[in-house]
Structure formats: structure tokens, C-alpha cells
Image (cartoon, rainbow, N blue to C red):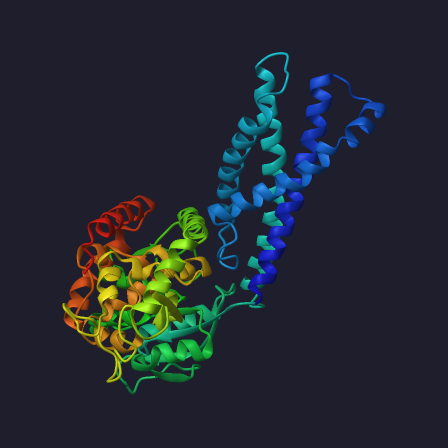
Amino acid sequence: MNKTKLIIKYLVLDFLAAMVAWGAFFIFRKCYVDGIFNSYYLRYVWSDHKLYIGVIVIPLFWLMLHGLIGLYRNVYRKSRLREFLQVMTTSVFGVLILFFTLLLDDEILEYRNYYQYVSVLFVLHFGLTAIFRFVLSSRVAYQIKSRKIGFPTILVGSGQRAQKIYDELISAKKSEGHFFEGYVNINGEETSIDGLKKLGSKNNLIEIIKELKIKEVLIAIEENQKTEIAEILSILDGENIVIKVIPNLYQHLAGMVKMGNVFGAVLIEIKIDVLPPWQKFVKRLFDILTSVFILVLGFPFYLLIGLLVKFSSEGPMFFSQERIGLGGKPFNIFKYRSMRIDAEAEGPQLSKENDPRITALGKLLRKTRIDEFPQFWNVLKGDMSLVGPRPERQFFINQITEKAPHYRRLHRIKPGITSWGQVKYGYAENVDEMVERLQYDLLYLENISIVLDLKILIYTVLIMFQARGK
């Protein structure tokens, strides 16, 4: 499956639908307002440069709106009914935006003409977009149902329930898109699944997922193994995969799942998205605009601090270190150097109160959080966000997950320059304190929103001005 190619197809069809709809509406609008409809006047309309500007610019507006609502996400897992309703909702909002920004100042005979404007534009845009998308989505659905395309899948479990769900899925007349690579048992049981290859146990589940590029995991454990479900979900936390369980496990996952809209075996899909698409878009847009503003306007300040760091102690201006980010992927984080260059000569260490490794200037930079300012470059690159759990090194993550396996849940979102844990707790001096601070980051994960981000940013600014950074 080529996800990028399919997204491009949706983009092209949406652009064409919007272009044709706006072109037809522009002609209708001109002829309707002037009350003239003949071949001579149509030639005049076709020569209007505003028509050609509109059929390029207006479709770009629609593509942005569709992206904001999430119409280009999960392109292989679409519900056509849900897509139809999404297109309808987007069309209503988009037409109203265009009306109030471009059409409201038109000269009209009476106000009912405005209603006709809105109605015609909505019918044209929604009708063409919905038809084009329905055709493409139906083609993709047919390919999945006929087993021409699918998602690499593994089963977790090797008992009767796993065998039953596997048999039901592969014998179904219409496929649900599962291309089974094998199964993983729980604790090394001797049981097996007929027709499937054993890949290992839950202990090497992550390695199997990465090696085989697994897209879906079906959890089908036995009733006497139900206590294992929390550990399995903890292992899978942060992985960019679809997780489904068989229905009779629902009571163990209340509040964490949504029913999948399937036509064969009924499965429950665990919801892992923490933000709706439009909020992700707004959050990323805010990250970019803020980072550009601070990096550009704050360049003299950056240079001044860098020179002070450089000449106040031996070593470079900046400090770079590998941290773990979204989906467990490593990236290099940037900070102003606040410690001596030999600070970790004896291995990874967390900073402590009155740490002798911290330079005199470094103490001030840490208290005011100015040492974190170079991370606006990380935010602009997309490695980080303004607000999110602070990224850690793999060395400490290994120690944290031994005491709190649910730490992996934080890898569902981008790490941040500041966080709820950072505001409430500050820097942790040991692994136990990192685990204690984790509760605030998990609270953020469960309550993440644009409003909460703004509150955390306000408290962060207050801490900076009051020099209360730990």
C-alpha cells in the first residue's frame, strides 16, 4: 500500500471538485447579479481575471480546511458514511467563511439573493466533493474487502479464542484488511494457532512490530489471562499501530475503547488519538508561528546569551544531547550549556540542588529557564512542541519503565519545552522523582487541549520572570 500516493489522489480530486464548483458558481453569480445570460456575456465572464485567481486560490483554501478536519488522515481506514458527514460539515463551514469574506459586499437586489448564493455554492461544492471522494473511497474499500490490499497484522494470544477469531477473519467472504504475519503468545505457552507462524512472546512484541512493520495488533487472550491485558497495552503504548481486542474483553477496558465499524468479526478498537485533527493542526500552527517569532525577533538576545555562555566558562555555547520523542524515535535536543564540559565524564547523571557541575551563569539560566530557549529550533523542526512531556534519555527511560511501564504512553505525543510536570514539579533529581513527576504528565495526556496548553505557558512565563525554575 502506498499511503502517500492515495493522499495525493484525494488532494487532486478535492482540488478539482473545488475548482469546478467555484468556476461554475462564479459564472452563475455574474450572470445572476447582472441579469444577463448569453454567449457574448459569457465570453466576457470567461475573460475576467478574478475567475482564474479564484479557481486556484479557493481550492487551496478548501484543501487546508479538509486537512484541518482530518480528511487526509487514515485514508485506508475510512467509513464512507462518516466521510460523507465530515464533507457536509466542512462544506457548511467553508461556504459560510467564503460568504462572509468574499460575497457579503456584492450588490444585490434583495437579501434573499444571499441565501441563493449560499445554497448554490454549497450544493456545487458539497455535491462534487462528496461524489469524487465516494468513488475513490469505494474503490479502496473494494480492494480491502477483496484482499488486494491490507494491513500487516499479528495476533497476541494462542488459545481457543485466538484460533476462533483467526478462523473467522480468514474465512470471511469480505476481508477486514488483515494480512496476518503470525502470532505472539503471552508467557511461552505450548498452544499454537493452526495456519499461523509463531513469532515470539509478549517480551519481544515491540521488536516484532518494528521488524515486520506491523500496522495492526489483535489481542485475543484467554479468560484466565485477563490480568495480562494491562501489561500488553503498556508494552504497546506509544507505538503507531491500531490495537483491537475481542468483544468479551470490553469490561476490562471500559472508557478506553470505541467500537470498530466492521462487517465480519466484531472487534473493539482501542482509541489512541489524544487530540482531534483540528486541534493538532492548531497546536502545530501555534508552535510554528511562536517559534518563528521568537527565533527571528529574539536573535540578538540569543547571540548575547550564547556569548555570555561561551566566555563565562570553558566549552561551547550550545549543548546537544539525544532524547526520545514521539513514537519512541530519538532526536537531538538543543540547550544553552549550563554545566562544565566534563559534567558526565562518569556516565549519565541527573542534576541536583546545588550541583557543583553547574556553572555560575548556568544557575541563572536554569532558574529563568533561558537554557531551554534553543529548543524553539526543535519545535520549528517538528521534533518537539511548546507544551508536552519533557523528553528523556533512553538510559533513564529504561529505569523509569521498570518502575512505571505506563511511561511509554507519553510517546503518543511530542515532547515539549515546558510541561505540566515541569511547572508543578520542576527538574527531577533521581528516577523516583521522575516517576513522581510522571503523574502530572499523564494528567496532561488525559486532559490535553489548546486551553490547557495556554495555561501551562502562562505559568511557565511567570516562573521565568520570578526565577523559580528548579
